[in-house]
Structures are given as C-alpha cells and as structure tokens.
Image 1 (cartoon, one colour):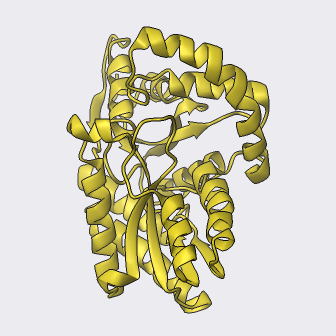
Image 2: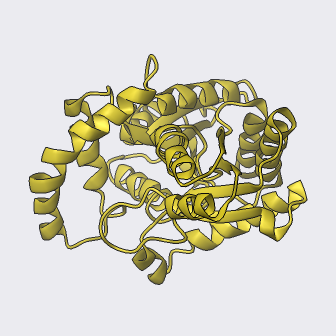
Length: 318
C-alpha cells in the first residue's frame, strides 16, 4: 500500500439537520446523551432526558434555529467554508466534521482512513480546552480507534488559545469593528459556560477563558475597567461558571452603562448561541434594563485572518 499525504479534520460541536422539532429532537438526544456533556447518574439522566427534556424542549429550540437558519445551519455553512479555505493552504485533504449531527466525526474518519490517508490531524475548533468539548472529541476518537484493524497515525490538537496568530485574529476583528462602528463603553468577552462542578473536578476551562481575554485586551490596549469576562448558555438548576452574561448585561443597563459590545472568542463560528442567544436574547436584556446601544462582534468564521490562524495551528502540529 502506498503512503499517502496526511489529512486534516476540523471538528465543531454540531447542529440539527433541519430547524424542525423532529430533527432537533434527534440532535439533542445525541448531544445530551454524551456523559462528557452532562455528568449525571446515567440511569437518572436517562429518564430525565426521555421523559422531560426530549418531549418538551425540541419544539422551542426548533423555533430558535428557524430564526437563524439560512440555506443550511450557519455553523455547518461556516465549517464547510473553513475547510475549503484551509485546504487551499496545504497540499493535503481538509475535511470538517461534527461531534453531534452530520457529517459525523467517526464517519469522516472512516472515509479518510479507507481512502488510504496514513496520518490524520484532528483539530477541535474550541480554542479553550474543556472536557465537555475537546474532551468529547478525544473520547470519540478513542472509540473510533477501537473499530479499526489498522489505525493511521493520529495527532489530536488539545487547544490553541495561546497561539499568537489566533489572539491577533480576534484582536484585529474587534479593532476593525470598532474602527467602523466606534468603541462602546464596555467590551464584554462572553464564553460558553460549564457547571462549576466540572471546574471543581479539575477542568481549567474557565482559567483559559480569562487568560484568552486578558491577552486579547492587552493587544487592544484596554484598561481593566473597559472589559470583562462572563459566561453564557447555562442549562439546568446547578451553578455554572460566573459571572453570567445575561445578569451582567442587566446589571450594567440598570447602572447606567449606555453602550456595550460583546465578542465571543470561544466560538469559532457563529451559531445559535451567538446569533440568537447573544445578538437576540441578551441584546433585549441589556436594552430592556436601560442600555442604549448593543452590538455583537461576529465570530471569526471563515475570515482570512482566522484561516491564517488555523493554518498556523495546523503547521505547528503537522
């Protein structure tokens, strides 16, 4: 068998196949069944998921997806653009995959291995490692390895928040936005949250988020009182990393902060959590509390500076 060139696989969280109740139910069942995502006693969670969450939540969530849906889910459209753009930087195959939904991560790995690629570089598109995201990709990779008679060489990138090219890309995107729209009184760095219990068990995700924001703020020359880190997208009754994004925006609005700009550096592509939760729900929270101007600074998506950063990460590991 001839030796072939390596292949690169970009992995993001996932999306339903359509903004419908049935498709969202299938997606949520797969997503919320992962013990990396929900660390609860499995038997109890089995019944909570099937008797409470899956019968009730998909209809509401489907409406939210419908509000941002284009010809496809934004995160899948961006993933395809990212893979195509990055492929132009290397003489090798670049594919994208989803941890949940399609195209499925393990199916993409099967296809590449069956084509004869003798080394696969896996890049989870979560800049800050967390067991619930990057760790879930590692779990899926381990499961896949057990199914293969012959296993190709594998490189799994842990995360890349320290990479100067990525930090520069985020800082430059904020700078360009502010040059065009002006600077707000406050810049809010909003990251996806995790339960505090995960942190207590040794997940240093929150620290990585704070370090990321500090390095970006330093590049922008911001003073401490001009920016803040918060966490969004909490789910369920337990305590999550705080301060919370929505509560902070509400507090600022009531305290007389007139303008705020929000950036979400933990998201490599715009998705439900940025387009609907931040630029929709949280915009209303701030304005209803008394704020006057709210602006969401888009994710890096397939911007050339982001592709530059992903290229730098891949070259450092390939």
